[in-house]
Every structure is written in structure tokens, then in C-alpha cells.
Image (cartoon, rainbow, N blue to C red; front, side, top):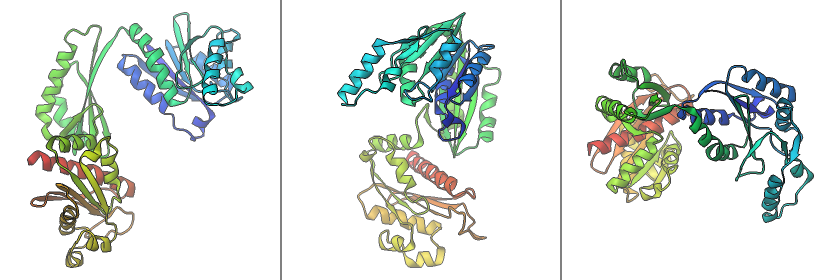
Length: 410
């Protein structure tokens, strides 16, 4: 089966809203072995919607649409589908009663626009939407399927997960298994040199998904029967684990901050950070994980030298001789952070994020990171990019990875 993803809304075409719906839907279809032939975005324009539907059905079996189903006058998807499928709009008493009950509980008056929203194409099979007022709609004609859903992401996802994906799974006829290996600290091309010789002539396919400081390796295998697929996939995962070793930090959706949290919790260790160039970004990553209060005590954002000396007890002589961006300074920042708290471990970062402030000896992108406990500290110097935001993100990721390596070596 091949699908077209059709997203409707002027806001998508003027860049006011980023189309995250199509990306999410494509990922779900991939897991069912359903390929996406194209993604199309059109405005709230009746002829454009109809033309996009006609063109898409020429060479795909299915269209998944989002957007244009609200109560306002610019929502024209229903009218377009009514015209395309040559049917009338009929009033859905079930939809009206559900909206009425929702509004009654919230003490919100029903308006004529909400009643108008309950007129739906008579050829549509309605898909229940527990999270909003507009139901999804399933059309099927001449072996083709069109599903229309609201553009609000959480409403669309509910309808997909409860009304669409289970039905498509029964029709796909393809079994797709996948496993994602999360790696850190090695670039995509270097990783490929390590991985590809191990998967030559294998039915297991691999995709490289790079991000800042990391590469996800997605292994996938498909077939008409589950027999032997899982075993073969696990065999290749084990092979890559032996080859890649410690550059693997997790699997599937695990982030580096989640992996660090798991390690600290398992070892019953606590952590504090002392941040200069990242301005609290490192603490943000750590605390983005639910339950991080189990192991994270806090952060000292020592952006100026005066805070480094007064709170972290960095020696003024160290700053004068070596500068704020130095091995010696980040080591003293770690010790100062640990002495100011009851934490077992500390991370300190200091660098030149840019775009200004660099020199011949310490160009923009120079970052020092220190990690350790009161007795043992390891440090590393990095040279990242000329971009400030990217440098901050790199520093956060690599600081967590340096802590991971410190913990692995304990």
C-alpha cells in the first residue's frame, strides 16, 4: 500500500505553524509497512483541496488528511470531500449530543457554528474523537481509502491510534520490525565504516539519523511472516553491540539525559552542575527527565568570574593565569560545586560560545568540560562550531557523555 499525506491550512503555507502531523503519521505508517509516496500541503481553498485529492488518488491507495474541520468559516475540508465523493452533508445527532455534553460540563454556551460543525458528509464513517469536537471521517470507494482528521496534533493522534492504525494494520499484509541503537560521540561517516561491513548482504536494513553529537542507527527488517524476523534482528543488534561498545548509550527513544538518570539512580549517586557558557542548559536537559529530583541536587550558573570566585571558590590566581576557559578553572568549579552541596558527582563547563570573544589561542567554540567527584576529576577540551546555540547544545550533550564515561570507568 502507498499513501499520500495531505495537510490543509493557510497557516502551514505561510510558516506560522510547522507541519508536525505529517511527520508523525509517516512514522506510524512506516511501522505498518505502508510507504508514503508524497506529502502535500494546501491552503484553505476548496478547488486546491479537491485537486490534491484527485491527483493523489491517481497513484496511491490511501490519503490521510489533517486540518480544516473546525467550526469556523475558513474550514472547508468537509465541503471539498462532499463534492469529491458526490454526497450531501447530513446532521449528526451523535456528534451534536457529544459536543453539547462537553460544553455543558464546562458551562460554555453552544453557538450556531458548533451546530454547523455537526453537518458531515453522508458517505463518511465517523471516527470517535475523545479529545475534541470534530470527529475523524473514513471514506472508502473503489478500493481507495481517505481519512480526514482534525489538525490539532493531540486530536489527530487519538483518532489515528484508536480508529485508523488498528484498521490499517489488518490490511497491510506486511510485518515490519525495527530497533534503534543510540550512539554518541562518533560522526555518521565513521560510524558507517564500522557498521556497514557487518551488514553486507543482510536483509536487515540500516538508516543513519544524525543529530547534534549523536547518531541513531535504525535497523529494520520486513516480511510477510513473523517467523525468524525477530531472531535475525536481535542477532544483528548483538553483532553491532560487540563492535560499537561504549559509544552505545541506549536504544529506541532513550535520550542521553535519560540514560544518565538511569545510571545515577542505579548507583544511588547524586549530581550537581556548575555552568558558565551553557547558562543552565545542562540543568535543563537533566531536569527534563521525570523523576530527576531523585539524583539531581541543582545547578550553579556561574556566568561571571565574580560568581566563580565567590560561590564556587575558584581561585582568582587561577583565573588570572589560565583564564575562565581552561582545564584548571573547570576542575576548581567542580570541586567548588561539590563542596557547596552534598552531591556525589559534579559537572562543570566553561567556554566561548560565540559569536564574539574568541582569540587565536582560544577561538570561538572552545569548551572545557570537567566531570568527577571530590577525589577524581577528568577533563576534556572540545572545539565545536562558530554558532552560539549549536555550541551550547553540543556542550550539554558532551558533558553528559563525559559523565557517562566517568561512571562506566568507576
